[in-house]
Image (cartoon, rainbow, N blue to C red; front, side, top):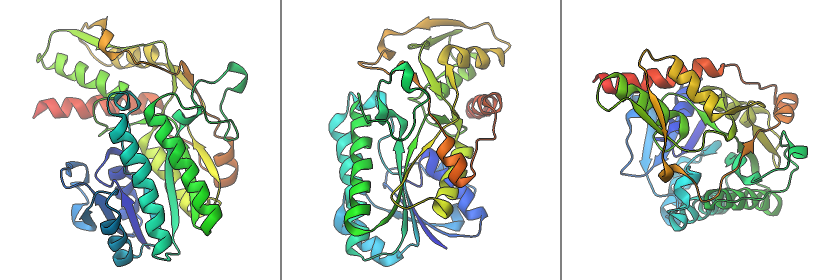
Length: 318
């Protein structure tokens, strides 16, 4: 199977590439020229990488025609809701115009491929208690530039599937984490600070933002398995939540991480980590993907947190 992954050098892209290579697929990837390739170190020889900005339509179309993949996983894009408030133009350009460039390239190349367009649970926005856990039929009410960009990409994918018959499956992936996730997200931010404190590199206090928000947290290694199963069994034109189906306060998560350290660490609020707008509770309903695809998350949160903390500990052992 010839498979193309946009954003292959990213956190999720590298985990997905490793899974697909293990299944004996012919894997191709697109990434920016400036991206760090360390996440692909174990499989670098097994994947063909092309340097391309997905908003560069002529070059992207040329690559699509050259590779002619049978499956395309679209992961390239800006992934941080928090950072999107400071970089809305870049977020819109990459996430919206990058997605439409890919869709139009597939359409113009007359490519009969299955596409997985990766979206976000952030598109649902602030949800009332009666609508929790969130089902796929809930209206989209994005409240960050990132969420607006993902909602737009979601609608573009739906439009191309209906207008041109492209075989597109959409996801609304809720929060996920795991080893290799970069800074700018709660769990790696907590973990890297703990690791630095343990190594004596910083004073023994940890800066945090709002710890009262509730998030649905899935391990990235479970998430990429969901993506692969959706490619095999998902219905074109449909959208699927990918989530644990259970929420945790970030304070609970931080307490678990602190419990894995022997150091006494003081937690302090950092006003710079407060977002302009935030979703208090985000918990998804995963019954559709369970019923139709047979996927369910298997990795416990405790295991995920230990693996993320150990990843950062190894970083600071070097």
